[in-house]
Length: 529
Ligand code: ATP
Ligand code: MN
View 1 (cartoon, protein in one colour):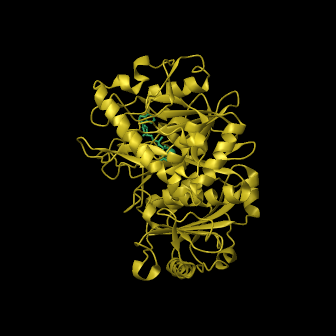
View 2 (tube, rainbow, N blue to C red):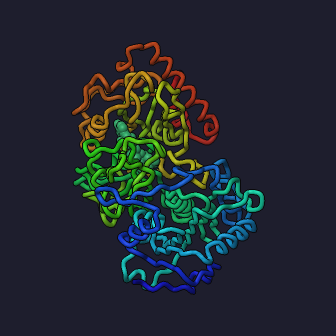
View 3 (cartoon, rainbow, N blue to C red):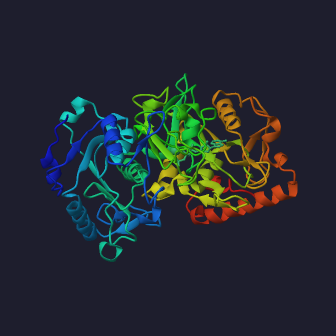
């Protein structure tokens, strides 16, 4: 059992002197969770918990403290909401008061697999399973590294602490607040574990590009046998985690990476996979990670059994599982790869308009990166629901404290300097929009990505998309040619042309706010209507 320097906590106003669980193993955290009645084991030994009221992030309740560091640097908007510094101190004290006579779980961990950028994090939780999430998702220091561990940041998370919006300056009883001056992330009122990883991600999305000239990216990454790295940008549900788990390639990471002058590195030490409709057949790598140590969230059990029902959306469609990176068979450790040869932009276009695979020019790549498009189905209920377009700059606006132009300019320079191929992959609908067509088969998407990575799309014919301009291959190994051009998969061609035009207009409208600040080459890549 590791001893924990209590004085270190006291220096941070954390006054509790009893009940500190420090650096416990996944086994012990699992046992404690079960004996507290907060979780159950699945038949394959994974710990299964419910996150409570929140089963997803709450972007409306994410704040950044307004101070000398952030005042003129942060791009204040709906995702970066200012929080008063004095109000933060009061709320911090209130939370410390709340935690003072509670059992707490402390874990020392770090972010950034590339040692030059390592950021030590001391995580403090109110329950053992939140601490298991931190074990799975952040990087794990060795015993020797723990001997002289100095935290750079503190992440304090108390799901059962409720703020009072009337006096605490929050919008609701739940909140996630980043304080760059104090180097603290304070999360309260929500048990959704993803708030912890995305809190650290937001911090790195400020520090790395702004202070260290490293491009931070919301993308997954893997590397082939020839050392060829691929990165996959995309908003939630577009396939970053699913498609980066490829048995023929080494997994670098599934969600958050940095691009330095000579490497791509993972910020995290684990994956956070969606598990809705998870099957061994479709996603063997992820399915096999459902084992002791994995933390499964909000997946119900099949009645009177210990078997998980991955098809159930009874609790939420956003069911999840966290696990350490090495649960995927060919994970790369340390998770640092070479500079990318290929970039994929993943979109889940439920309008069925964009081609399942296409090649982008440099101008188109920048246009798509700044646009950050996806369109998922709006509801989960049966019947036809209108898809809703989402435009999220750099495929990650909710996590980007700086202006998107900052990240886009860095990516543009790197893409040109390293002659990177850029592909767009539509993992969404084909043969019609949602309600008419179907989601493209995962096997086909995998085959298209493999073909692009293995150079098998070099010597094939291409045709430009009539509205969006990207080049569509006319053949691709392992994929029926008829599905490559989306228009040919729709039985009603007029309906396709109308849908394409409608989507193009949404792109153009969204881009208006960036038009003044980008080059003619990027502007020329706008869809033509
Ligand atoms: P997040 O940022 O929220 O972690 P993500 O980009 O990692 O999202 P995934 O977890 O990979 O998204 O989710 C993609 C989901 O879509 C999976 O459940 C996967 O099974 C499903 N899916 C269905 N068809 C496809 C396809 N053709 N390509 C990729 N994923 C598909
Ligand atoms: Mn993911």
